[in-house]
Amino acid sequence: MIGLRTPILRGNLNFSFLNLYEDTELAGYQIHRLKTELHEALIDLSARSNSFPVLVGWNGEVRSVDTEDWRTVERTEVEGKVHELIRALTEAEELGRSVYAVGD
Image 1 (cartoon, rainbow, N blue to C red):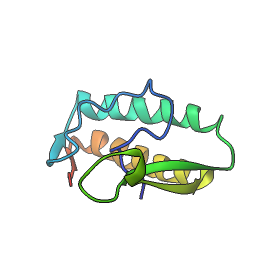
Image 2 (image 1 turned 30 degrees about the vertical axis):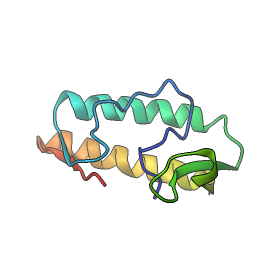
Image 3 (image 1 turned 180 degrees about the vertical axis):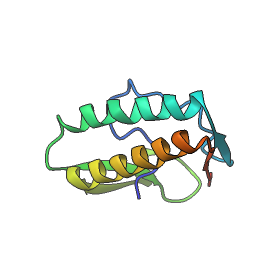
Image 4 (image 1 turned 120 degrees about the vertical axis):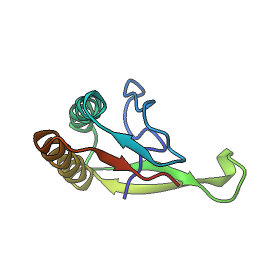
């Protein structure tokens, strides 16, 4: 799965409201904000080639060019995952529930 640890698209997406290393509860406006960012991600994805490399993390404790872990992903697979997440967030909104993002 592609995480939010590293931007996979243009740098204009902002996931700063997520704590990537601890559990985070999303509710109300935060769910709305995340859905808005995901819709923007779909627009950015539409400009991508059918497959493209994604930085998914680093090997070891030191973050450097030499330890980067890149994977090639299919655009349609990423789009499908984004749509799944949007549907889950929409359901949470409709039910008045929170969503939990589990950190590393």
